[in-house]
Image (cartoon, rainbow, N blue to C red; front, side, top):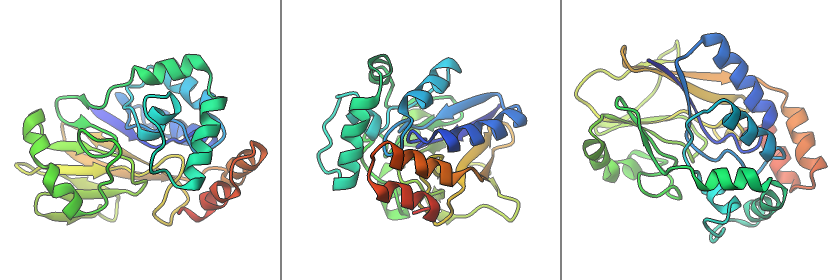
Length: 241
């Protein structure tokens, strides 16, 4: 099967629609969302509605959990805190109820999907040293690939080091080795590239492909400002930071 892996949409409807247009043209078998449907940007209801109407399997992200009152935003920086409280007030209760039903992990057989670290969606996996203590999770889940989000930066980690995609944006996983792969963020990339990021995993060929999609960043930034959200959230969209 071919899975489109998306993460960290963060209420950015312009980026989300651009990514879905590309994915639909690919005719993949399944879309999987690794969490943080909402937060930061200005269109939480529209993003929730799209995912729910399309029955896209979705993981609970840390911003989702705060928005629907499952958690409080302890540790959020001032900008993230302001955005989280705005999101709580501007997301329809029906969508908040749906967010409360989302799982912390989903196992698809050939891979397991989580938001942050396994068993803790608030933990960031930025480096190989961050990932290594969680390798046990693959054996626990009886698979050799864990797909994660949360950092907003594409990355490929294995038990023996850090990998990059080839020139054609393909990465062959091979056999007998465990991997943690982050497809990057749809709604707020932080790797210096403002284009929306997602990945496609072919479970039969055991190939992961990274994709970047341009979208109307200026319009997304305007929506942030029009909503009264912190201006920094608009500025960072154009910087990819």
